[in-house]
Image 1 (cartoon, rainbow, N blue to C red):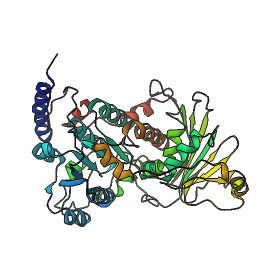
Image 2: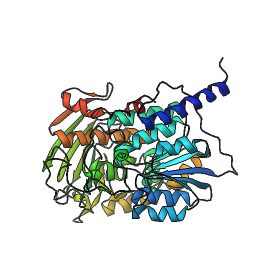
Image 3: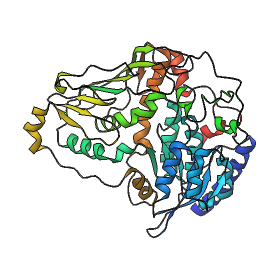
Image 4: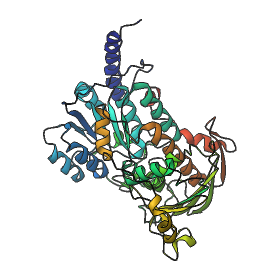
Length: 458
């Protein structure tokens, strides 16, 4: 039997070569499946590196980094001089700073226990894969990845490298998580056959008219635009309609409203109803379909098969400011809020919002009738604290990749329907579409750029 210490030493040598070669455009693959995650004792702090420290990534870094259980040792961003990074740099002024996450891992890999990944959707995958392969626990912002294949590979890496991972879906540790779990186990939520989810707030791309990627804008001198692309096969000109923030508008760089709000609205229903993957995705409505950006409004229907003694479920998704579902009679004339969900069971109907907002039984008369018999539930650690405790081996992360990955894949399938239209038949067993070759190509997306291929082999 091979000595584990010898294997780990050899692995570290290969990994160091991988990181250096990755930055140079040539890497090694086929590294052994050895967990290098350091055991952080109860009285030790978790050494944290924050990758992507502007906007949402900055908020994650500040929240997790402020914990008494954390020591922020490194900060990384493709544009460290952008004003959006100032708050994080000031909060953790003693941390080393890097523009390239590969160089950060090369120089400080042995000093890092965990990382936060608050970068655009399309770059979650290579950063997360490299971090996990080095035994680093990861907190990655939702959606987990930009393509179905990337989500699949990240789920496998979490299991292979035995790290603690958390997808940034705060509601999955809030009241709605604990309520849904308790009510499902008690039989309050049962025999669900239909869910209506809606996100009717304005999106960045609403009102845009595009027939290609914008050109002619001057790139900021402090921005590493080539690195911003990471694995993406499409190297496009710099534009303010891509960075910062607007990348979510484009199919190849983001997951639109699905990736942004879908996890906050549908996560608990997907998990505790054990929906898995759908067998059909239908684009019922697409306003302003475009080859580059998401529709101005869309209605997408997912069909999920029966699971054990649970019946099939139809899930309807509505986005667009004027594309709102009809309020059911159970709301007794009240209007739907801008984001939320309706869950229709055999005996009860539930109305809920987003994130950690708890469900409410409607109509009010039905809630009053059964209120005394509803099970109580307690709320545990926050989402960020749960990740830190997961990295220390004291809790199981609630939104781990094996949980959040399936949900992310549902949204990956939904964005394909938004892009192509029509009705797509999907086989959850083979994880392939059975009626559309173009849709199958989009499961992986375009091949990665030269020099980034081996991130798909880690």
